[in-house]
Length: 274
Image (tube, rainbow, N blue to C red; front, top):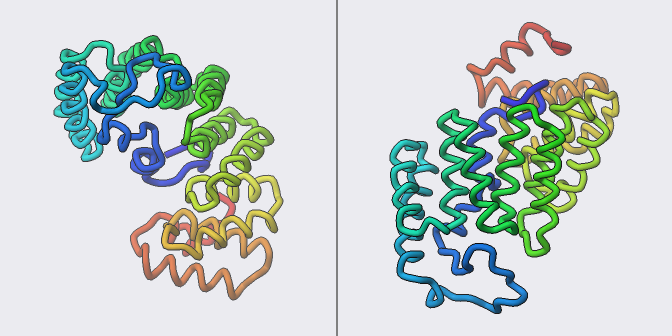
């Protein structure tokens, strides 16, 4: 899914989980008006919302549910109704950008993210999502700038996932040193995330730091989040370290759990360096 095997099969599904958008925030409702400064506006609650905003939130919750289920056309219809109810609702435009990304329309996705940011320059989720779109389009430096804008929001709670996306983007750009440093920062904040652990191990393996790669990939493969890709990387790491027993244990697990995987086919061919 990601270039140079620096991703994770099913990354787009994981993206929904680690937060190309914090959908939980939409489902719970967001009382702050666009552009509100939390420090000066005080603590806002649902009772502060206008009737238009409440209608928009209800539509957006439906749109988010359809989006998570992969029903993008229906999600888009509900998102449009949310915007019609409250054109100034930044979160509605942010979700619109994600839907257009899923539908393969990068231009409209960018317009939606930029509209969300124009309405609320502190919308860290929208900056993150714009950065990922730019990374997907090969605009790596612009993506870095957008990720940094997200990270600069003091109250932003999803720093680990933005650092992870930024690190993957650095890797796509061929900047292994920046990728490793950024992924390490993400790992320090969220050591249990499989995409971060996998990408760190992959980077280290590719540059020959196999001992450190072993630490990260073993931790992942010893968890319930291991998949065919992580097991295959683990096999190659253990092979490079001449750990025959560990290698065979991982191969047995790969054969048992993922008998139809391309990784098992590669193992059986002995294609360790492809």
